[in-house]
Image (cartoon, rainbow, N blue to C red; front, side, top):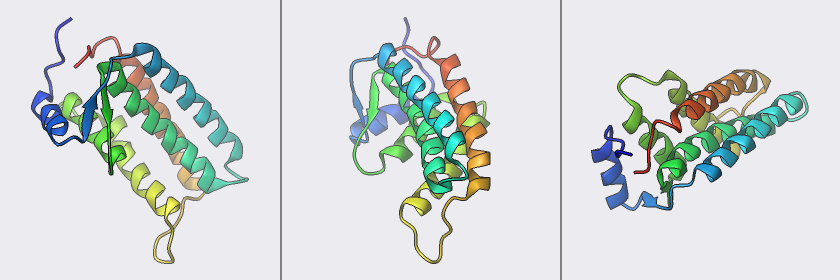
Length: 155
């Protein structure tokens, strides 16, 4: 199968900067990431009222796993500091244009996850309303990811 052409320059740059590394392309592992992501979403829905920040972390992690699944399916893995940011950077480089609104939801989720993970008096942590928005956003990312696996060959 032919290499995925869109975003090659950006992916090559991320590889050269050691922000991405090559690994064996692994569809089975990618599929397992999505199974785990679906479980995280189910758990997030179950604990919203009990632990909104924890539920948000689960929803965020579901979205992160979906993005990681795209890359591991291609034989790519983020590395080092900022690896969550590299996930979205690498995915969008390969999928835009056209705009992929589903994937862009990861930006606000990542920002709120960081604020929740490292709170201070000036920044709010995730609340139940955030989880209510994050679960369908993460689900949309998972759904889009599952559609891409067969179309994005190894890098």
